[in-house]
Length: 213
Image (cartoon, rainbow, N blue to C red; front, side):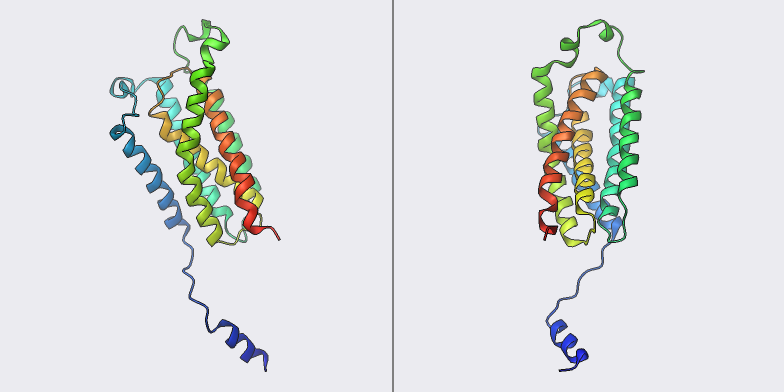
């Protein structure tokens, strides 16, 4: 059998594969994130004083910072699924944005909170619940990113998994930012970081499994 005949024989039963579109995949992620956000008022999770606190500097910092991080991380994750992608630089950029966001929180701390003790400010009992909520909100987005990753051909699945975890974690944190009743930026930095780190750890452990030989 000639090479051409062998190739035709092997490829005759293959179904056509839909070409990837990064724009479509990013829109899917944004739609899922928007769906979670839209469900927050219906489920009673939205903080009751949101209409009064909407322009408070600490809340604007939280929502804007997480929104920018989530958008950048989603683009980074989707781009990392390409065979020619080099996600390391994007991951460094995402980390730099996160550090800048954390530093910015020091300038919007509400009056009087800086005088409280550390445990009073971070409130560990409530913080664990917040981190858990972020983790749960991130799971549907992580599942979608995992599905998109399996359909693509990442050549660095470990880094793509990290990018997916960051994207899912920041999206979950962004949604939860509208629900969280705590205003102290230190509390936000500590427990939102814990929640996002948990998501990144799960993503790094689970997502590359399919690509290991």
